[in-house]
Amino acid sequence: MLPFKHKHLATALAGVMLAGSFPALAAEPSQAELLKELHRLSERMEKLEARNAELEKKVQSTPAKSDGELAQRVKTLEENNARMETALESDRLSEKDPEVVTRLKDIEFRTLSMQKQARMIESLEGITAGASLTLVAQSANKAAIAAGEPGSALNYRGDVSVTLPGGEIGNAEGKIFAHFRLGQGNGLALNNTLTSTPNTTAFSLTNPNDSTAMLAQAWYQLDVPLPLGGYKPNSREHLEINVGKIDPFVFFDQNVAADDESSRFLNNAFVHNPLLDSGSDAGVDAYGFTPGMRIAYHNETQKPEWWRTSLGVFGAGKGASYDHSFSAPFVIGQLEFGRKFFGGLDGTYRLYAWHNGQSTAYQNEFDTAIEHHSGWGASIDQRIGDATTLFGRYGKNLSGKVRIDQAFTLGAEFGGSYWNRSADSIGVALGWLHTSKDFRANSATLDADADGNPDFGYTATGAEQLAEIYYRMRLNKNLELTPDFQLIRRPGGDQSATNAKVVGLRAKASF
Image 1 (cartoon, helix red, strand yellow):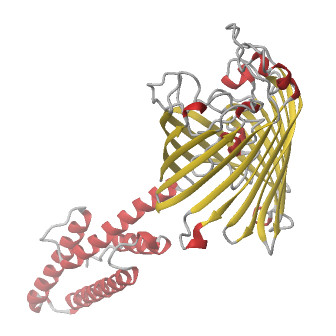
Image 2 (tube, helix red, strand yellow; image 1 turned 120 degrees about the vertical axis):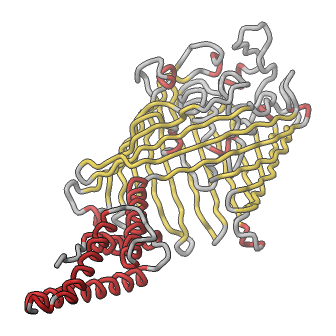
């Protein structure tokens, strides 16, 4: 007798077990149907083997004179078995194959397909990606526009980010983050505003006709559970270490209601602390990025409440554009608390201080003179209702010559569930940028660009005051449309200046 080989049946059975581990990939027929078919085929093959054994026993016990017909039947059965084995050795389906072989091959092909998809999933596990395209159109009243500049502007910006697994070191887990950005259009140029720009999404390389993408960020993060060597799932403390090309505002001065110009407030004074960002104390390059590192300690032992302390050291001046080493860097430290108030609603409270060894004095912003700047700030966001979040920021300069020595912004975001549009929201913000003593004393005669004409030509007083309101409409899960209005009163601290009024429309597609 030629016994039937079960290797293909084992392969098919392993595939069915694999399909149970990846239910989303199991194609028709279902796992139960495949198991039923395998069971039927197994019983059929067992019967065939039993029949072969019975016939072989008869051949051995029957006298030679009467074994002709029986021997022919055994020969036929052996030939059938041989054809089945030959058919199973081939990867191709044939209409001449026995029915049991055809069905077994079909199950095997399905199994191999599921195994291939499972390997693809394993190779992609831990990879996340996102992309967005933001377009902004704005127009301002004629008196607010800088001389020789257009009264309206259009720009776009594209962002693509990807996060990859970074391997493990002991029980510490790493990840790699990369962010690419491209865009065209510089946005509106307003008269004598202190630091604020009405369109923070504006992004363009040196050549305005060039839309080539640049590598904005590329950093490695290592999450280290504490205590070292402890059981990772039970860890409520960990270290975060980041090294690479970074946007410091990803990790410092965050705010859940006012930190993303592509979906919330457009004016730069409401996106980050004005002293750090548009005031230039962050020391980043012309596009907002810089090489550096950050280390943070995160504590969740009192979960759901938590706290974190972090320290960042980043390149400043020429160091931000890789033209120099880390001499006189931008250093910032931050303390954060996550608390629940108003019946258990989330709030985050941040306090930070900074020092930049290569800031540019406002009197010398058109040359290479540098000086040391330092200051401190706070950023708070707190939910006070199911769809209402309040926010506030404060910044104060401690050393160095700056145009504004204090900045205070506050506002709120209201979710659309109040008017049966849960994905929509309204944002409202007010800002107060106080002119420094040095700037008020020199603004009337300051000629930093040495062209023979005063740069401002007026005596600054008081503070520049800002307001912004937007309505964000969710058209579908990938598309948002946001009308926006901004008012800037006493731009540049000039009490005689006409108020700037900026009307805009933003469209964002994200994937």
